[in-house]
Amino acid sequence: MTTPTKPGSAHHNGNGSGRRLDMILESKVESADLAENLIYEFSKEEYGEEEHHAIRLAVREAMANAVLHGNRFDFSKKVFLSVELAAHRMMISIRDEGEGCELESVPDPLAEHNMLRESGRGMLLIRTCMDEVTWQRVPSGGMELVMSKHCPRSRTAPK
Image 1 (tube, helix red, strand yellow):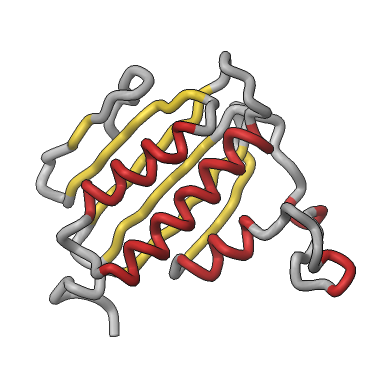
Image 2: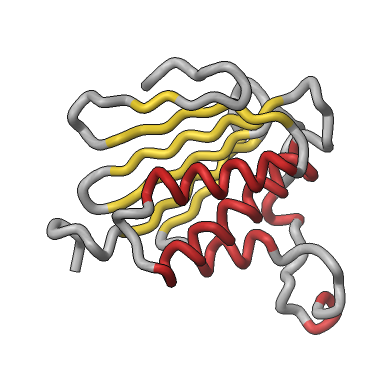
């Protein structure tokens, strides 16, 4: 794993096992735009327009959750973004430094009594947009979301 960089900067790992991007982002709304755009530039050759739309939506939602619900806009806390592009998929990790939540306690956004709520659909959108999604509590504090998207343009993509 590469060493995290200072806030707002990127590091590309050229070790031959694919490409990697590691960033430390501030706990502010603008970080969602930055993460979304960086991931697009990092992977634009691997995905078509439809896949990029899904990836961008998932990244935006994940960053919003990390900043708002995880770090609660605490500027002393950071969001750690890692992206790895291998031959057949892209893995994205977004980790906050907040208290986290119990995933089971998040209301079902498809339940009739939740349909008109203004929030609560981010996790559903992330799961819908990406091929694999996991959340885990980090021992040092915070939550980590790991999501992946298969590369349709790769010759070694799973069938």
